[in-house]
Structures are given as C-alpha cells and as structure tokens.
Amino acid sequence: MAIESRELYDSSNGDRWYLVREPRSGRVFIRHEPNLASGGDTELIEVADFLRRGAGPEQEELLRLIGTLVEQR
Image (tube, rainbow, N blue to C red):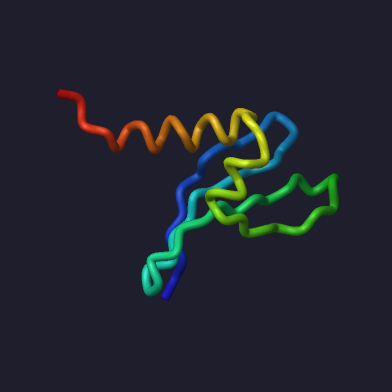
C-alpha cells in the first residue's frame, strides 16, 4: 500500500519536508528531502523528534497545520 503524503514546507534552498502517513499501520512521520547540492539522503523523522529539532519554518508549518484541526466555536 502506498504512503500518503502532503507537502509541508519547501525551503528557498530546495529542501522539502512532507507530512506522510502509512495507511496500513497509521504511522505518521516527516519525510525530509534535502536539496540535490547537499548530497544528503532522504530521512524519515518521528513527529516528536522533528518538533524537538527547533523552531524553524518547517516546524512552524506543522504546528499551524495541527492547529487547523481544532474547531473554532
């Protein structure tokens, strides 16, 4: 079964972060795809670990997205 994904953040240097979910297990994580020039490998990051890494724009976007799940009354 395919992993479902949604682009979370696209940085000006070409790095991309995606919120991804494996439908079978329900596991949710962040996939980081570094820009080609950096030569880095794509990594899968647990959500809690991703948020602990700092307060960059990619973490802010995840928190904003989570905030949209709260119903306004």
